[in-house]
Image 1 (cartoon, each protein chain N blue to C red):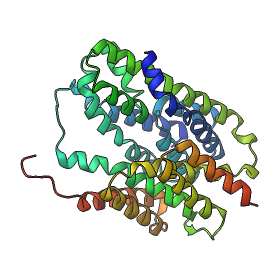
Image 2: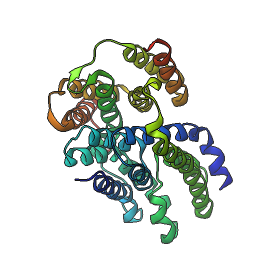
Image 3: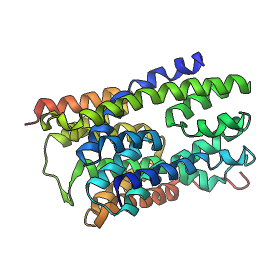
Image 4: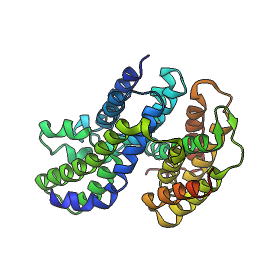
Length: 101
Length: 224
């Protein structure tokens, strides 16, 4: 399937997710606590899966230890202490540039 | 409207560079500049878009690529639920187009403002101001990244921007201990499942992380 078709499908699906509760015009006052709990776990679970595999894997092998690991840990520490996304990205990239090949 | 722009301003600083990273990542993965730019207009969700173009680049099956993007965007259902009663007071001709620009940043900013501002007209223009102002640098960054993407040399190490971006989004998303469990289990399963074909390790990580986070949560109080 062409990249364009996959982008179109993802766009359509994302709109349907966004409109889900809005389409009911606010008549659904509350969502069940279990559903809300599961939804709240999506960002940490999914973002960690992608962060870990893009940082630690190369194809289906573990990457050898290199500047990416150091920069990744530093970026995580900056994000944790400052909550500042821009600073976290800048520090991570600066370390990779400074000690990379 | 000006209030919406003002409130969201600090959050837009990252939108331009983030759009740039997505645009470059997309063309590096063999997506045409046109498709990459269209992706930002149609999906309006950076994390899902980066994951989608990476999976397309790895030649994952389309089912896995699209489902991974949609699982990442499932969090918008949570915003949809919490903002629905405010949106219900907007005219229909605004309500459904504005749904498309319901980003994390616009939702969080607006929901905070709506706690103290009850007037539907004020809320409508606050949302328009914040949402529209936020997506502009995102779309501009995407366009620049998609057009110059191929020109950027490997020496820039932009490949690291992908994990860096996800780390930057992940860390603030962890707000309590069960969410930390969800992240640790999700990340570990995704790495341990690297032998799975087609990027299925991401989906395996996502679902085991969600399940672990739910199991690690205190059970809801009876009657609540």
